[in-house]
Amino acid sequence: MDLDTGTGRRHRHTHRPPALVNRVTLAVLRSRRWHRLLDGQLCELRYKAGDGRMISLPVLYAAAGDRYVVLVGDASDKRWWRHFRRPGAVEVCRGGRSRPGIGRILPPHDPGFPVAAETYVRRHDVPVGLDDQLLAVDLSPEGAT
Image 1 (cartoon, rainbow, N blue to C red):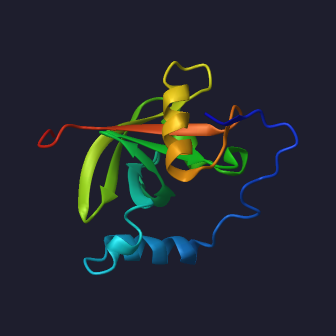
Image 2 (cartoon, rainbow, N blue to C red):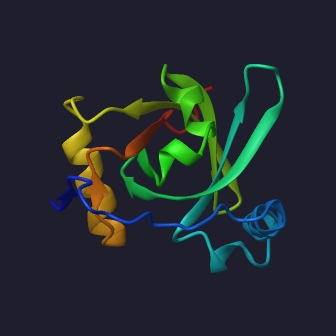
């Protein structure tokens, strides 16, 4: 596994995508006709924010069985992932289907961090640093509510 220690590393992204890009990406992911263009790499995460608003985000994911791993690149520049410092309800929407699950941030000292990082590295060939945030989403079994 290629863990980046964060020394001398540049940010993966120089800026956040405009809201319009996220809206268009979500529209494609939700489309019956076009979702296949993105489903292999992107999925939609939906969760209820502390103030009750529904949040929908397109995210790059890596799947291992019923666990999805999301790397929060440049986490210090983002806030959404902080919702999952404690395990929280989330839906993963992919392939025209929505599945409920529980999402939580895996800190580097968590026993699950190395396996989750390896899952992501194997899928995307992107190094995961010890200062990166990993969101693990464990989906509910099929048919469970």
